[in-house]
Image 1: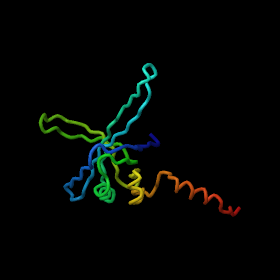
Image 2: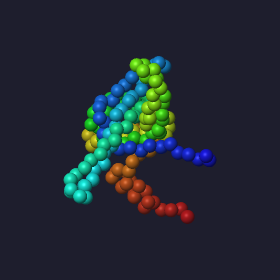
Image 3: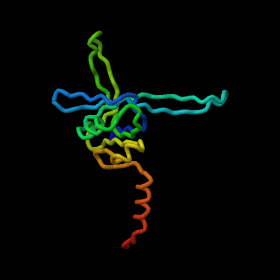
Image 4: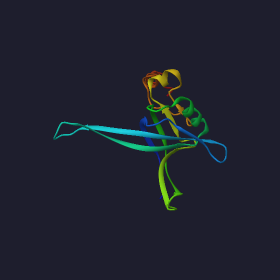
Length: 153
């Protein structure tokens, strides 16, 4: 294939406090359980329905791991950008091969944004490796002001 893309974008809430572990090489890794939900109204009954998907998120970026450890708790609302990765491991009890698919945040093309208003006020609203941000009201107004500059051609 000439070109391909492995990119995951999610907005959701943490289902548990982040789990921080130390790897064999001495670096820390963070594991998150992220819930994304969608809701709708059942046409036949008028009843409100909801479906929640759970995602495993693994963060290898040392800077993001430190931020996760300091600021994120169960229930935190976050936006992440990462890549899908499937890893193979052996179940110790049965000896069978098992597979896990996770969203991995590692390297320059990963980001994590804390979306809770409390987090925004106390800290930067963006913790990322590539310094990109979701548009906020502040970002939009700044961008509109930039458009008023004179164009040199």
